Length: 142
Image (cartoon, rainbow, N blue to C red):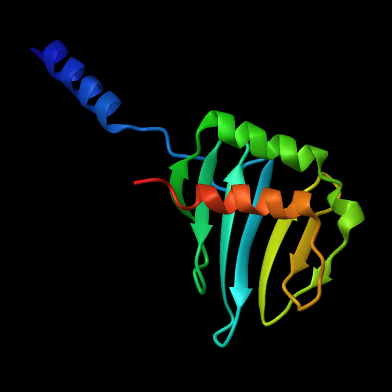
């Protein structure tokens, strides 16, 4: 009887325990932060895509990231391939306007942050393509 109870407890524990997604702060294998903000309120929304495909969101005034979804593996790989082909350090755009968009790529020694939104700022097509791919992940098809 004791063995049956122990077996049931182990089975219940195994069923209820689910692996928690990695947090953006703790994840070390590769990630990209992106988002937009500004305007009258100055509100900023930041998303973080991890290399494993987990997508998180941090809304204005939140102090933590909220897990949203797991991006399809093929899409996550394609985005990180775009990032590796992007010479973000050479871009060095820091021209926010009243409303702005940004991509922040953490590196081993330093982060690369690209910000744009000011009128007249020309943003390279490959950066806009990357940003569009990232934002598309935040709006899953229903």
